[in-house]
Image (tube, rainbow, N blue to C red; front, side, top):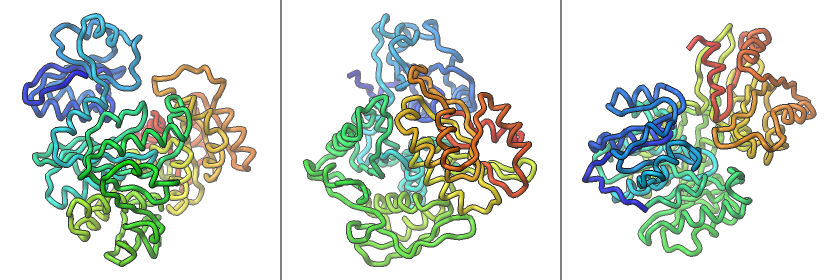
Length: 461
């Protein structure tokens, strides 16, 4: 693998530069005086921001965007060998790295490098831990998969030996990392266009744990099935968290909710009360996310009360139960949930938010995921009072060869007894909502694609 010397800036080109995680790495390289160029399929606020920082950004991907002045290229999982820029790099013999490989090389430059992994909750937990680290004046460098208001984006350039990032399992990306602390939130079936089955996924997380040095730390959810499997061949220090105090170093007791579904609880350490935690985000799943963040912080030597204050200060990140505004008296909330477990957690949280009727506007993400979890999607979505479905979003990495569509989910949702419509175009969805939603209703736009545009168009953003 090509190794980058971060003390000797070079010209690096990014294929897919506008992605949330790619753009953060671009900002870090720019801060170290690298020359950066890149391309993406469309112009966004992210690409415009990178241009303002001095980055050359091409809209549209073409072989003409690549020439011999480029020293190395970084690409995302959505880029395949038939991509014109990828093919041109091969032709010119330009060294190429995946996003995960670059991130791993960056991590190796820090004394404390923390990777937050799991099928769900990575962005929220990373954001909560970010709040703690900043409150504790650790001056961390942070790469998060969402726009976090307190750092003004998705990247914070610090000046200490602490680096915090999300660690994604897709295409085994996180196996290129160099962590000193791993957080495993949960391990469930997902990304079955890459992994064979749940055993394959578990093996990937086990290999991720084995990257830890002997003086490293594993923070793991004790509710994960047979969780000792992941560290049985490691000599790292293991810290557990979860709702079961008997099997968790950090746990929660006396759970209760406020008027907006925000949770409060008593933090326990080895079954002894430490402090009261009042979250500013709804949903019981966020109790677990906060426990993981607190466990990591305290393990790093941060005072427990500072850790509690940090998670209590967290008010959310873009696309995670984000209240967008109102249209004709009904409230629009947006969420990134795209897996049945995430949908269930988000809809349960939404049920505790003040509303008359709860509408869920869902855009399935990838054909493989939709086919693999078809009954589970229907069961999860049926928790809403009314469901509206958009077309499947391919994420740019799949072709429609699976014989599956949103109409298949619609049929099963209706069988559950929940009303459900399916529209091919966003304009049709918007018109239906305006004609059917009433003041006091909540409309939850949901999915990992561009479904948020429906809500933003309705409120005039």
